[in-house]
Image (cartoon, rainbow, N blue to C red):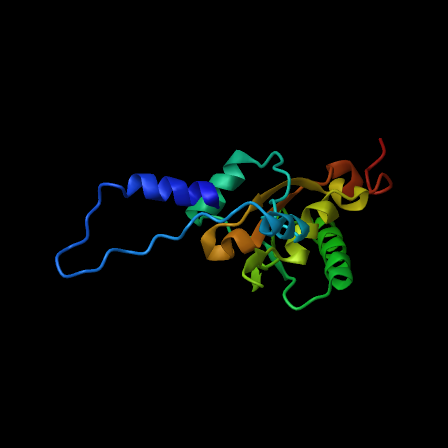
Length: 178
């Protein structure tokens, strides 16, 4: 904080107020005494990182960006607890994979809130990347990417699901024998 005030003063040294106006009051640099210790003891608000970028099909990505392709299913996690949201994500991905869907949209919400003058990120959004990395979900997901603003922007994610192999979707008994 003290460096910012010093930089501001240095930048404003040759600035003069307009006629009839008073000179602006520049805050004084604070001493590094007890206030420094108090600041260190407070929890630091950090920006919630998005999920780890994974390979996302270029053709699907372009089609989504241009509006030529829409998500085939949507899950909205607003108003859910962490446990309920985690279960809903796992169930949703499993169901979408069983239906052989390719692109789904999961809305986590931006989750930013102001408490005590600091901005905190949402808990569901913060945990979302970890849920996708779980083995039961990881096997079904080919990629994750933040959504386009028309689909929720930074509060939503496109999830690209892996294609099921054709061998697993048909029975060997149904194949005619020669």
